Length: 322
Ligand code: TXA
Ligand code: MG
Image (cartoon, rainbow, N blue to C red; front, side):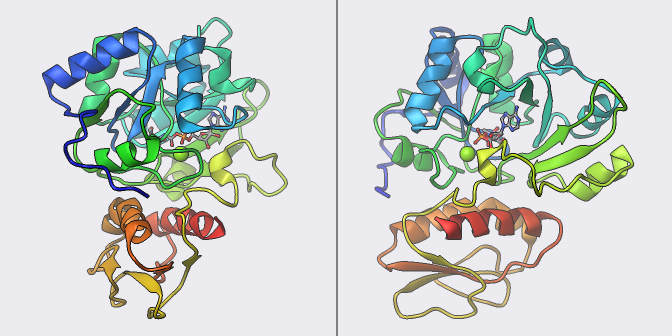
C-alpha cells in the first residue's frame, strides 16, 4: 500500500464547509468518502443508478454484492423497508448505531436496483456518526455506502487509508478523524416476515453483540451453514492485506511484523491492556501499518473469543485467507 501524503488535496476537514461540498457532490450524483462510527464509507445517492454505478466502479466491486443504505431516521427507514415488530424493537434498541438490518424492500421505495443487486431484501442502517448524520440530513438523500476501500482490501478507519486505497477515482474525502468502533456494522437478517415472524441470522459479526440481539428477539440465531452466501463480507477471503498473515502468534519470525495483543508485545499492538473494544478500533489501522512495513509477512497475537473478540477473529480469519 502506498502511503498518501497528509497534504492530499482530496482530504478536507469535516467542518461546515467540507460537509457543504460533500452535499453538493452527492446531489450531483457523484460519490464522496466520509466517516461513520464503524469505518469510512463511500457514499452516493441510493436513488440514482449512475451514482450507484460510480460506487461499484470506484471500489472495483463485483456487481453481485449489494450495498447498505444509510438513513437519517425511522420515517425514512420505514419508507424503504417493511418493519415488523422485531425490526422495530431492534431499531429502537440499537439505532442510531452500528447495526444493519436486512429487511423486505418496499416496492415503491425508489432505490436504484443495483443497490440490492436483485435481492428482494435491502440492508438498512441508521448511523450514529455526527458527520454522516449531518450529510444525510442536509442532502435529504438516502445514501448507499459500502466501506471506502478497494473491493476485498483492508477497510479504512482513517481518511488517509481511503486516499491510499481508492487512488484517483475520488474527488472528496471528509476527514472526521479515526473511527470509534473500527469494525463494520453487525448485520442481522430477519426471516419469515409474512408467515410466522420468527427466525433471524447473523450475516456479519460486528460491534453489536449477537447475545444482546438474541435476548431482545427471544430466540437464538439460525446458523448460517448451508445458506447461500448473501453477504460477500462472509467470503473466506476479504479484508485482506497484501502480505501473508499468520494467526495465533506469540512471537515473531525474522521476516514477520508482529501485531500484539495483551501480554504478547510486537512491532505494534491492538491493545496492550488486552481491551477488546480498543483492539477492534485499532485493528484495521494496525493491518495497514503492517502492510506498509518492511517485513515480508504479518503475524497477529491470539485474540480471545466472545463479544467483540468474535468480530475481530472473524475479520482476522478472512484477512489470513487472502
Ligand atoms: O459499518 C458498515 O456497515 C459500513 C459503513 C460504511 O456503514 N458499510 C459496510 O458496507 O460495511 P459494505 O458494503 O462493505 O458491506 C455491506 C454488506 C456486504 O457484505 C453485503 O453483501 C451485505 O452487506 N448486504 C447488503 N445488502 C444485503 C442484502 N439485501 N442481504 C444480505 N446481505 C446484504
Ligand atoms: Mg467492505
